[in-house]
Image (cartoon, rainbow, N blue to C red; front, top):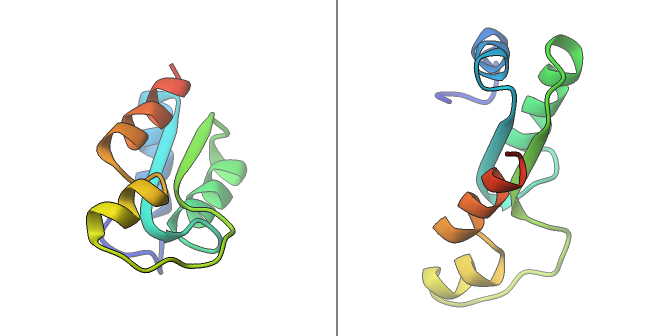
Length: 87
């Protein structure tokens, strides 16, 4: 997705219709970000199962990128696992 605001509502709707499910991934809080914006569009246009991958409600940590990705569930394995939950 190129921009969050304004969100491309037709893009979200088209992919939801095409795939029947949506997974979003963001390297920050899942609250009030891409996942929230996509969820809003889906509720209004094409409700499908959805998973948001990102930082959950927690205190921040400090470390290397690899450490933080593992700590917050942002590895490729975590993203694939979220997608598989929807199959």
